[in-house]
Image (cartoon, rainbow, N blue to C red; front, top):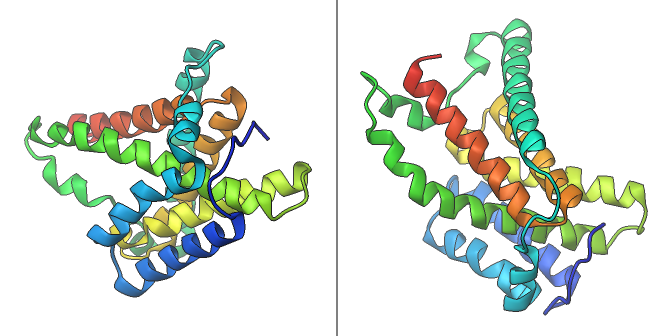
Length: 214
């Protein structure tokens, strides 16, 4: 596990707070301003300002090939999950992202979401690593503990996207797998910039496929 930096609060408290956030989203069936502010503030409570800056340190080894291959792999995984789900559960199991409705007639208007999308991705990745770190702190410091922390955190991030997909299991599973790779990218490069760049590239490619009607 990469250096987890100096934290500013008790790990167990942060785990409980994160679980309460998930329960709140499940209860409210959506993410409102309170949970949005909470997700922005929590990493700073957990790591402190200097810790967050350390998480966002520059990438210090070749990254481009990993970025391209990871985006391609995620597209393949998403397509495979959709295909398998349609065969096993029927077409009703497949539900797209709400933004898909905005793409009509090759309009460029939906690409205006890129700026707020970039900010959202930064805070999502900070939140994901905060949760991963909190869970890892309560587990044995070995490969099993690391794997459990990453998988649990990824599934939690998938659940946080539940309202977007009307709680359909298939897209939640796809989001969870995506976050698993995003987090592993942070682990591999020891910089949150790597996972942010991958997450943003994946989402931009998704928007591009919608625009081109693929």
